[in-house]
Length: 70
Image (cartoon, rainbow, N blue to C red):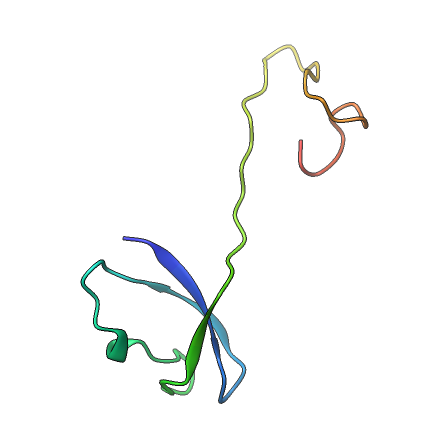
């Protein structure tokens, strides 16, 4: 089941919900105030390539593998 991020229009709370494929859209409520006035927001995600055990950086990063995305 996917996890979606939401923002409550009433109280400003940002929260995540685990949503099933057949979930009723009316069942989605703010986890803080219970309001149904919520909107789906973009979630951040992380992706990291595997690194070799030698410790050398083999990526294309111009900082030599020292930036937070490498």
